Length: 244
Image (cartoon, rainbow, N blue to C red; front, side, top):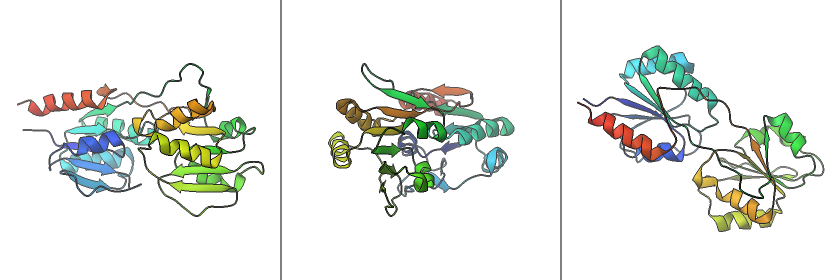
């Protein structure tokens, strides 16, 4: 009998995997962005109440395999997944997507947190933030010499010296070129997500010779099996499902 699967998602890779799962599997989303309504598996939206709550859900639903395909920066969710797997005695497999690597001539700079980021940006005027919603919490702190562009999943009304763009990747290379040109971007700020769907912004920064400031990746917990590529994870999952 096939193990019942709980997939923690929210990424492009997770959605692709969810489309391959059976109706008995559960695809879990935090609730940010669009919730798919065309999947063959069940969809659950919302949190679990920490590791203990997730462990309780795993036991209640008879889950036998937990898949963590959350964002590389969703450190708390991944920590909860690893701990919940221990508490409930089920296997946890995780996709650990490799980060982007700088090429010859790239000017990439890493920072640990918002405070370091502010210092790194003090000499720039037209930054483009692709960090998610965090910059929205600091719109009242924009230096007088700067105009921010913030791209995140949900749009909101522009404020003084800031434009907020609501958009979800993938982003075409020509679209990114047009965006950089329209806004006069002089520095790109990003998480090192490693996603192909949002990599085109790095290509534009490279073409224009612009610096890139990257938020350093968090440390993620070790789990029973870790995969660098979604296709390898899928192949391992198929073998697991084929076991008698």
